[in-house]
Length: 154
Image (cartoon, rainbow, N blue to C red; front, side, top):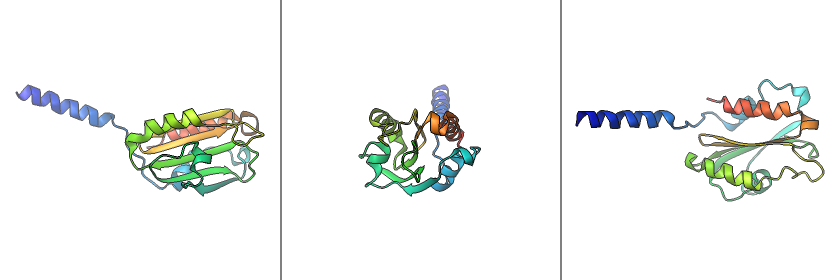
């Protein structure tokens, strides 16, 4: 009996260690850390706006998600294909489903005359991140650096 309890305890400990933890901090601070190490001269002039029920479909290409807050980082001039959308879900269990929905619906030509060549949709805990950037105007290194910075968040 003691062995069974020990095995169950070890399994619970293993499962607890494997769950993905939520990232603490404000979305503003997290967004700032996503751009860490990127040469500002390579970036377009960016503006941050809050993600709302009114602009979510144009930003994440889905509208039916239960989120607590979101932040969009896009150029002041909309002809530059660069968009970073960070959203904190109310329930981290929904993150994989939300990522798949965004992947199915994302439109890298949302700017009509230009197209984002790099599109990443990632999640970490209760955070979901959409990155869209162009290789010519923005250098693929920017999208990859943002992706790596997100993956390294703790």
